[in-house]
Image 1 (cartoon, rainbow, N blue to C red):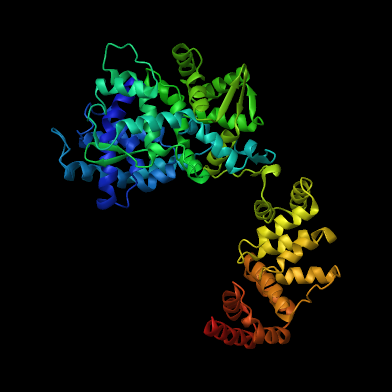
Image 2 (image 1 turned 30 degrees about the vertical axis):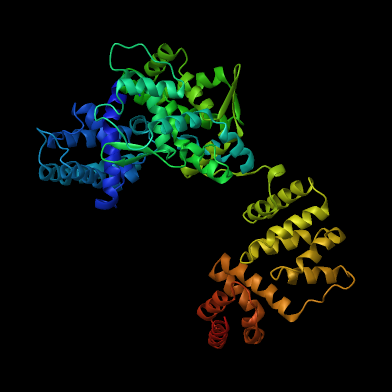
Length: 574
């Protein structure tokens, strides 16, 4: 952000934080996230006071400015007018509209009048996605959709296990700074309307997080964008939270960072993932700053497409060209960023290194394991499909079974083969069957595990014998041990056979109605009726829903009636 944008944002933060609290009770259907951009551009383009709103301000802000900066026109069309309506109501109800603002009724009337035009403007953006001229107006450098084909063509991306990622996240410097800043803020600290902190407080906060005090002739609060970025990161991480009118406070658990639990650590890191946008260059000119919005994401996605690492000079040249192609001000913005930072990518790399996502060694920049995880998550959030899987050496048996269930047969076979190369057959069998036993409702995982372990022959005997103790696996274990002619192996019982049938029905039901009906027809009505007389007794997790489904979809009325009778018996004895 430029100093001007940062000052405006600092003025807005207390109001927006109060609005979030107010909206929970008074406007729960509104999206506070949609208010921020409109309120910021109102302050920058229409008013020198964030609390002064005039009817004449609304049309230029919403119809001229917003189409140039909105990231999701579909979401904006659905919710922006309602969110702004709620925000203006909040300002009026809390006596924050200052003179000479127009009345709330006049402001809301204007919103009603321009709503159709705003929705039409957003629909124009949606309809023209892909058109170069519109993309220059509505897109940014971080638009992953422009690279969707290249992302879809990437080979399988391997992700590291949570334990390794959590260990890396615990060492992220920026999260530690955000923690220290939040702890310094403490409980119920009052924040100002023109600047969140006084200059004296800013100087103290800089010392807490290890940032130098800049030399400036103006207010110190307007010359420390890095401090406000870390403040915003603390909010993103939920280390800092609004506590009421004009106050913020530290969350009770903040001082415990880095947390002991891996899942808690990764949840926190993911909360702050969108902070990567704070790495975008902050220039004196607002329009030039907006031209380079998304630069940090653009670098990340190109690293992913490049296999995880790129030559910095080549990457810099490619991004400069992308900025020039995107907007007629792109070249000017790039040159301004170079003059300001020495390297337009300097703030981008500083933030990404600080958030643990990249490393820079000489002329080479590379994604870390944490960075790969993060950019895959961001791409997925953009509804672009990637083939991302756990690394083979770190994949658990349950992950292997779950991923393979979604793959074509040849790819699944390759995954199993690569996974089993790293362990002895007996160990592989044990891990697979233990994974299958974790959830007795997952028939597909169970069948997959039994199928693979069944190919391991004698080596799997100890694992099968242990599986006899698990009710959901006993039918498979008894069947395979008998086939292997293991001494003292129990013969499969009729109940075991019925369990296997229920597992097969569960899987075919998951494939769709037609597949399920087809599997039932393969049995024939007479045999199916006989099965329904006894199969309801099996303590299978899905027996009741399967019987109900048979009663609903089977074309033979006699079979449907038999299924209803069986369902009644199952429910009566449950």
